[in-house]
Every structure is written in structure tokens, then in C-alpha cells.
Length: 125
Image (cartoon, rainbow, N blue to C red):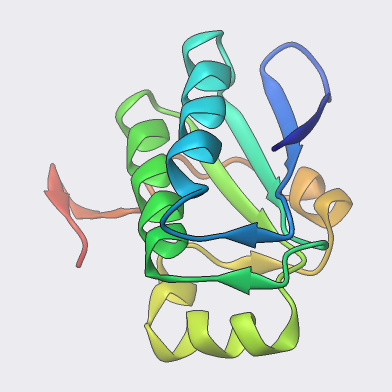
């Protein structure tokens, strides 16, 4: 489901599939979790091909962000189309996990671990 390219020792860019829904989210999540277990500290999810994202996919992205936060890592979301970027903003998720215009722009952003936490150990949301 994912197309993966590694950018350095502990940074991975993963191209998301065209659809992430109830049926595909567990597989995409398992693939991302494997990357994290293999030592990925910065995971960039490239959504440039994404055409459909349901609540299972949104939940997956938030879960992955929290998983990386727990490991002092960071998740970066890149290239959401205009519709899903609008949905992301309406849900208020853009304040917790900003969307970068491209995967390259996400890679150029300085690391900010702990984005999903608001205060000492307190989870956002």
C-alpha cells in the first residue's frame, strides 16, 4: 500500500495510497508502525496521491503522530489536496499537525517532537 523512500538514517518518506478507509487503514497503519519499530524517528506521510480519506484514516494519522511523540519523534503530513486540507482545518488538526505543501518542504522543516502534547504529559484533543 505504501511506497517508501528513506531520506537518511532515521527519516522516512511514505507515499500514501489513493484511498485510506476502514478497510485499508489497518494495513497502512501496520506498515507505518513497522517503519517506526525499525528506527524511523521522522516520518513524512506524502498524501499527494490521496483521493479518499475517511475517519479511520484521520484516526490513523493522529495515532501515528502520538506514537512518534512517545518516542521523541515527529510525524509530518504533506501534500493534502484542497478538500482534505479544509477538512483537516475544520477538525482543528492543523494546529496539532500542520500540513506541508510537499514532502520536500516537510523534510526541510526543523524537527518538533511532541506536537500532539499540549503540556507535560497531557495529550491534546
